[in-house]
Length: 369
Image 1 (cartoon, rainbow, N blue to C red):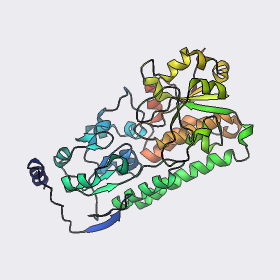
Image 2 (cartoon, helix red, strand yellow; image 1 turned 90 degrees about the horizontal axis):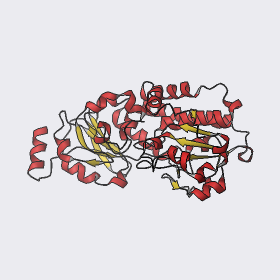
Image 3 (cartoon, rainbow, N blue to C red; image 1 turned 60 degrees about the horizontal axis):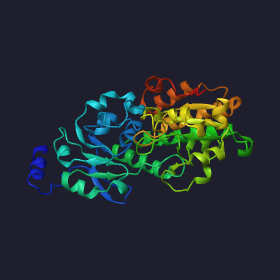
Image 4 (cartoon, helix red, strand yellow; image 1 turned 180 degrees about the vertical axis):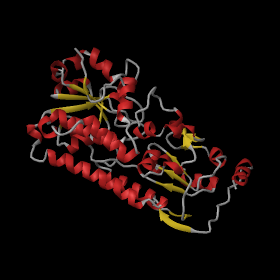
């Protein structure tokens, strides 16, 4: 079958749709009705973060190819994706296309064994779902990705569709319930703490489709939302389901002057001019902020790294909680909690390794003076 599809592609013809003896019908995130085999043993994951979600569902043994991001194609010298740290063997799988959903139908046709289904996240943005299905003759399931604040419904629906396709519905529900339990635990710890009584805070250096400096933030940063923290950038929140990313002027940051600053350590792997840590060290405006003056700057694990690391979101939440409300998180060892979260989602620990690769800046006070 692989050679037949390859021949059709080489001749510039439309690949035949593969008939299946036993099939099921599913509806994807674009509302497309797709017929797929009842039993799915071989898949590929296209687009930012798709493979992460598959690992959460414990479906990594069904992957038969990966995109360039899994083979060192990201513009960072180290990796901050817990699922990739836990399963380094994924890098050894055959290549089927470039990262961010730029798939190569000929490479897909050359995979042996062939995938029975192609999962594709961010399908409305990346486009080409119907074309890819036509060219490969393989069902393409369009998914979203979502997030833990404005896009939670999209995240849950994506996990459930993947679970339905793979017959891993119980695991999908367990992951969703796990997220719910963590969020509920965080919220109950600060339930009686009014935002006006809490320290004001800011998260800088967030990656967003690439690395950024200290001015890069997210007004709806999930750990701050879960902890009812006084995020100084909250006023910039658009309330939209996609990431409400923002770049803040230095002068505005000085006017806001947060009590506590957190730095996403992904920024520390950028060149000096764009490196959030170097900017805090050298920029006179940033140096004038109260949190820098008082030594209240702390490192947190990368939030976005080829889309959002959901285990890092929750791990960061517990660490940030321990800084902002130490008495309410006295029972938590943040790094142990992070590893427990990674173990549930990815099947093993990852944060100690990531921290070593980032000079142990995660979950630590950053000395600037």
